[in-house]
Amino acid sequence: MRDRQADGGEKLGIYIHIPFCRSKCDYCDFYSLAGQEGRMDRFQKALLAHLKETAPIARSFPVDTIYFGGGTPSWYGARRLRELLSAVKKLYRVEKEAEITFEANPDSTDFKSLRALRRAGFNRVSFGYQSARPKELAEVNRPHTVEQGDGAVAAARKAKLKNLSLDLIYGLPGQTEQSWHETVEHILTLEPEHLSCYGLKVEEGTPLAARAAAGEVLPDDDAQADMYLWAVERLSQAGYEQYEISNFARPGFASRHNLRYWLLRPYIGFGPGAHSDFGGRRYSWVRDLEGYITGVLDEGALLDSQDLIPEEERGCEYLMLGLRTGRGVEEWEYRGRYFMDFAPIEARLEEFEARGWAEKTAQGRWRLTPKGFLVSNRLIGDLLERQEKVRLSSLLPRAQARYQGKNL
Image (cartoon, one colour):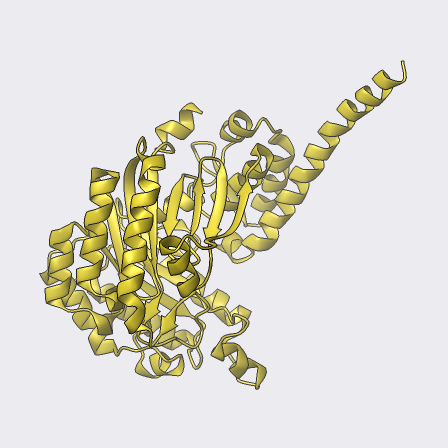
């Protein structure tokens, strides 16, 4: 446990889900709603009540990250965000140097609101930029222009926000390798501290899925792989370290809140559909705005799911999530925390290394390479199967001993 505590595992993250958007993008399957501004005030009341109700169980935990995601928190309004952050600071043990992030779209923010949020204590902003090509933005119903994206970045800098992240998507309808290169080169001129580059996924039930089913042709897996590998190399040249499959940062600017998910550190979520991992238990709230509001304010059904997580499952998560990161996994970390044999895992990682999919660092940690990240689901699935075989084989002698003991 000593390593876990040294990593800050005893500290707490807070996530607040704001489900409101100006409009829904064609690819989005997150829980978000357009045209529901009239319900914002009652939702705010529910969030404030839920934060207060939960605070006593988290009182002993220093909070080192707070993240407002969505939806579009900037569409929710600076006044409400400031009120929520003030409540969190009053009710929880927020560290002085905590990372406090809000997501924003370029069309729903300006210098005045950004300055107000920075003065309230927000110190990191994540803009959904997605593409620097007007046609590609229009193809997926993004609500902003390239000019608005550039203007939002300039406004954030003017407001003295010194930790800026931009989201980009590769594999958009009509996108080519050349237009992706142009987007990345344009973004580099804006000099963000952090970049998230996501491959487009066609999620069931979205307008984009209907378009694909109707025959629209999208960039295929090979095209996305070429875009991804080029971006990894180009961003490395520009001084960005790849610290997770889709995330790149200048030194010292990796998202501390996102890292806590991948490093199995505790967090508590608020808002419809929000998840938590706290006290050895994972749970989530109902994925329904009105259900969440009534669940909090009128003591209705609020919990959607909950599970106690046994250590053997944590061991699976350690491999699955750790291998998404540039930090990777390590033998004695694995053995010490989960009391499981690492040798079969390492033998397979050595095979991956021979294929160019994994590498062992000078510090003795195993991690996937960019080529390995491209097939990470398959590689990690293989390792988890081996882990399960090891676990079952270790149970067999104990089961045989118990059986023999009964028949003595």
